[in-house]
Image (cartoon, rainbow, N blue to C red; front, side, top):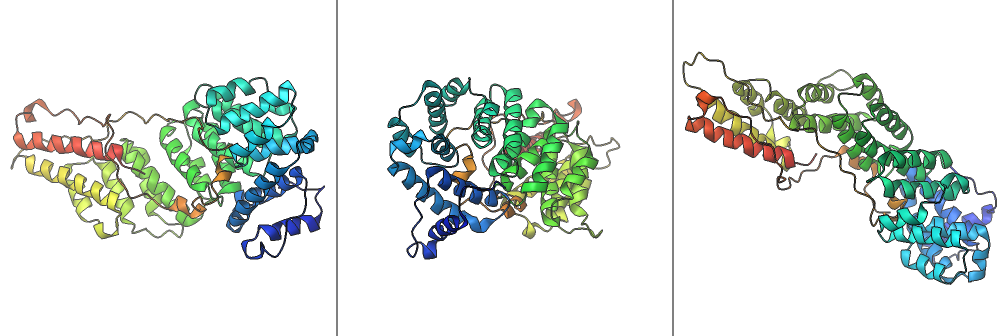
Length: 443
């Protein structure tokens, strides 16, 4: 956490008191320099990144106070390089774009500073191409560490779509320049989301481990959980399951269990039988060695078994699940899976000596990892979201089931001998339906 050597303890205490809602009227913020106020804001944001949820209301108040200070500052104050850098940092810490534009328009800047300021404004305004052009000649490593870290995060964010290799290097620079801060938290989280596109399993595991060690209590940890689950499924062929287990072991027991449940669900949907079975076993087995009775793990392992087991075996397993303990979305999955299994069981002729071909609803290509360029979120884009869900959100599984995507999977091709059987044809239609349902279901 950064230290504020130039800010007196009394001034910081006074400002924090003013930022606390119940004493805001009893104390007035001291007449601090803009750079001092921004440093106070950064201290609070770094506390939030480390898991101090109580600092969220303080951040909101500090953003208001800092915004007022910037809007009313005399243009001459920004001739001090510290204050000008603070203005840019404030802009990338959840600051008001309107305030930034208003202040910059009153300043007389040289070409380099003017271009940099405009690039940041373009970023806040959701203009990634303009941001790339404006900041192309800016080297974050040549700036002061605080400003350079933010600039590296901005440049990396707008280069994700077109230059993922460059973006990952910029995120590394951001982390190097600002360790233990909200900047590092955001850079690590975005790196975890980006590495599957680079097919870099080693970096994915390293960055995930670093995030879990330092920022699992961040209010933005649920976004990391989304990226982590997606990355494990996408990179399952190039990562060590032993290392994966080491990473999840650093989580608390409930977080670990839910992570494995989500991996099992995604893997079952994508037809990754081995990964789904592994994750289901990890979710079912608690750390004390006792089996878990969570019906979700039974459901997801049952879904993965569709690709290898018989319909009758699948049906027996699915019908034993306590549906009342499932979410609305998972009950829909259970209903669809049971319907398919029931139809296929009834489609097998009595006394048939032919072996039943396993029904494959998992022949889906690996999901592509689409990472949209940052549009309207500020650079520590998350700093402008003080009401974000707490870290515990990563232990929940969303229940809503959106409509199936247009590119839903096509059912497995039936055997030629079965093609004329109306019951089999109807069962195949249901397989298509469950493929669409699974393909569009949230994690």
